Length: 459
Image (cartoon, rainbow, N blue to C red; front, side, top):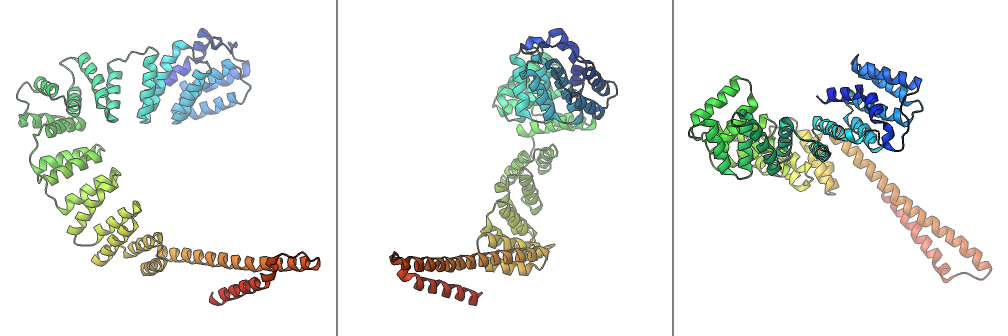
């Protein structure tokens, strides 16, 4: 949709600019293209709108921008450029062009509202919810009045950002516009929001309107969900199942696992994990190795590593091999909890059954290296007996050699400094102006030379 909007805007960019007068921007008095620039502009516009060739349009626009442009031409180029960049997927560039046009006064006040709305749609298409809402607000501040579909978009945006009261405000306006004949999607969405905001009375009210019978009639709920499945509307079926779960209607393990899998299928792994963990703790879902593994997966996909670790540990205790302990060690490594990582990885190696024990030894070596246990790290890397372990050993050897070289360099510099001091003392003694420190320079030089010799003997 946004591409079509921007194409339409581009196709009338010149007419709008002439009609409203870019000169309204105070600083610009120009009202037309030069012949060369007009040719390039029209070529770019034709390639975009008529030929649907965004790359050719972009080339023509770049040719236009390479010329000296007056303010009128620059304004038209920016607006056309935004439409082209939408087609090429450069959404940030499109927004930048539109905002530049606004800030430089190339878009009259009467069109700012539409421009802000277009920007909000660009951000919406890239899932940048915060910026989409920001420009929705700017659009409304310029006088934009949301229609029914735009109110629905706002409600969904706020819900996705967990700002449930604001989502409810817009969703209720959608429901008011649709009336009792509103689609099931609107009912389900409001049920969800009323539950999130604790408005149980209105939630029950909706269920009565929707079902026209006892809202706890599980058979009816299941029938509605089944119809949505048959129609291929899995999202609506999910909303029905979710409402059933929130209403306490799901009791069996299969029913509860269905809602867990629903959340996971619709890319809400954290909510899926919270339900699974809650129901396992309540004893309504069995706490098997497979269930614990699923729970750990869900938390890790949701990047809730701290919550995943105790689940992985519990699963590791039930596992017949060391694979889960290896995963536990990797999780601790991601959190840079090196001591715990080594402990888990050693358990994994001892328990056996790993696909590649060498990789586990490399991680053990890394955990020791990070805790300055260099000898232990070398031992682990040698145990790994793979390219990764050998690479770490080479790296540590290079570190040691560098440290030795630096230490010798410091001792060598000390000897050199004392020798230079001794020469200066000889010069000062000739004129009878040697400081007291010259009395000990030979002793200090000898000590430094002995330290350097001792260092060379030991290395």
